[in-house]
Image (cartoon, rainbow over all chains, first blue to last red):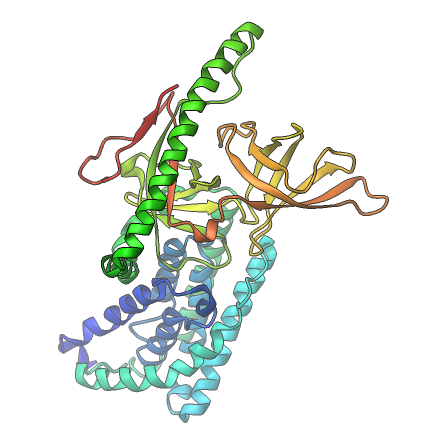
Length: 163
Length: 295
């Protein structure tokens, strides 16, 4: 792994995660809030596909715990969801990386739906109904994938991160 | 070449352990509320993130106040002045009534039910997006300002909710309309007691187990009864919207609208029972001085 020698790459992953955490916490009007993409999830999916040796289930779990605490949600719920999503990506990262972009989006959709199903199941056990717009975050998140992929690939080339 | 393949069995094992750990945390947090201390630490850690996320909204708020038209400000000033006069007049009557009430109570040799000795402190609702499954807001006061778990929070209109998570300089407040929230209330007109349970996203309250013959009417105001020990007695909670008595049913279906309109509130008041705690003095950090209302 020759890229350990370069310095800038070490920062790109935490910086993108931090940005995702901050932007996800920004308040938007309630009518738009249901459509907002889940940036932390897409960052976890991206990095666990592209840098599976750096970002895996543990990083995803810690991020999820931070999200849970920051949002005042059930502690451990987002942590479990994100680590499940990261796990799915780790298992398939070699196949998915070489797929055409449309099929990559399909894969991202499947991963996100699996995460949502886990969240819905846990909420169901606890006795809370999923809020209105629970599934509406999916389209925006999936549509964000090409932008995220394209942008981060360029940054990664500059920062020389490979798996 | 360990860079090409990741160790699938090891990852699966780690994933399963994390999943188990998540389940344990979920149960400990949701079922037993046993993790409030570590949650407080983590929330304190996340405060910079929250502050940056809140910054644009706050900036916008200040900016719009700065460029607001002069006439608009004058109008607002006039309106506030009128409200202030009204409140001052009502307060005069209030102290007279309070004195009279105390005298009458002494005559009857009964203990006063209202609990007037409270101290208040203003807190701002921080504009950050929170978990949409739970009806809650974040405020900009925390344990450094003396905020404690289960502390009652009111708005200028009525009961708002209670503090559920505390960090050093922020806290999260569960609204009274959340599905997990319930508080004991009393009907101002008839004295009928009930439990007001949150309905979740609809923003309404429901009062279960009210007998079909209970004396309640649409428009009735419900106050806190003080029985639950969390909220002091006598604060307005909700106005009754509809009573439906299904034929043959033992219980009425009662729906009420909270008077505080929790989703629109920008500033809330934290309440301290004056007997055991007063907000600590932080004149630098808190522009709003704690106003102690004496009996």
